[in-house]
Image (cartoon, rainbow, N blue to C red; front, side, top):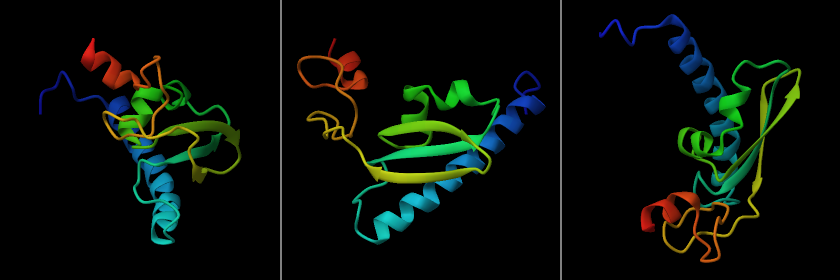
Length: 118
């Protein structure tokens, strides 16, 4: 392992984010099995995290959460217990990438697609 990248803080951050991801996945899996969603990245997830969570900046970064948590939208709120609720997103499926993402231009493209075609 390259010592340049071996940081206890980084490992702890990833471990905590994976714990949060597992909570999110359990809720989505129930909905997929119940045929409420067809795919994992379709729902909007409201995540309740412990007050003062040190990862709030990451959790509120849409680009990071859409890739790491594989959701169309992640809303974060403070609470006393880590939990998640999944519901249908209000975002339509994008015509180019087939993701349920917010449009960023008049062509209806998400940020990723708008960056790719510009």
